[in-house]
Length: 482
Image (cartoon, rainbow, N blue to C red):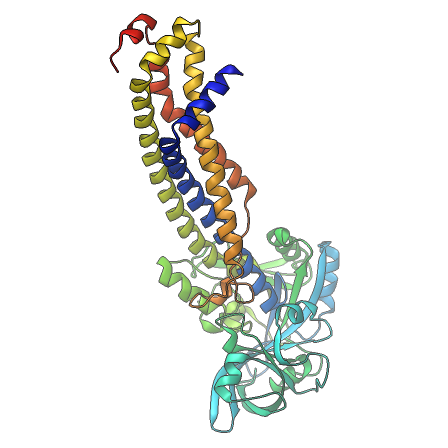
């Protein structure tokens, strides 16, 4: 106890020096804690926004060949798919049907490209929650041809609630079509891709695509446990392959990798076609730097629909016999994860450099302290303090400094991080934000690692001069002129 009291007294009596060391340690703790919290928030927001955008964590799509030879994306009967979901035993929150129209919206002389998602409004509670409206309503005045458009798109078209707008598109059978919509609501922009995503009635959009009543393009599964996404996809893949033709998910990002397609017990090998903007959720691909990563992300977010995103579709789809594919939210997150991994690596490298600089500073400071306290050490030794106790006086000083600096830096990061959530962000890709605001997520494991590592490194940096202090001869120390 007396050793710790002496150490604490030494720290407090040298206020200027102690504050400088604490500030140096605190800066490192602040930087890595803030960076970790922000990257965690970015990952969580991106995953949440994509889950909301696509209505789930797992996505089943079907591709079928018509008698004319045309490939179309369609699911005509969800019964075998729902049965497979039940048989797989995965815990689901909801199973949603979706269609997707890629075309143009026109009002008067104004026109803008857009993607219209066909949704079943009665089942889309999550979408309504994450898509706040600045005008209009989801519940009142929703007709068959009602549409919710984002604010940016409304500004481009000069459209208001109640206005009639035209949608020009290509149907699944490659025919041109034009349908009319009534603006029922204008949504607050929550994504930089918001000008490409509008929402309308599922059956109405299916009809516009020349699909038959009850048909749709993707079955999206919202899981109760998002962490089980990959495991659930693997189980569902295996279950569906027992009775349906299912393309096996690629295990590599190489777009030329062959893919085995299960056909109810039989297998065939098919090349995976390259995925472009119409590839939908078929995969993110690799990332050749930040710019390449964002380009890949934009391509993958282009649209849910896309025949090219179903491996084996172009070569193995038979007339009247669909090929199904399963993709996941994690497939789309690969590029985001790569971007965050780069950011995390840069942050950890900077943190490492800061640690080295801080350790050198702590080591030099304790060497100066050794010279300044030589006579004091001699006095303590003459009064009966053992070498081990002298050593621990210096080590406890390092522990106190490391603890104070780490806690100060971590607490400051918490304050700045949580305060930043209150400020609306501009100039940042809104896909990474939650309703226009950044999120700060505390990683308690990382906080514990930062705290422990900074204290440990402080002790390591101070150990050599501390050991030299404990080995001083009492008589020689008392004679010292320092």
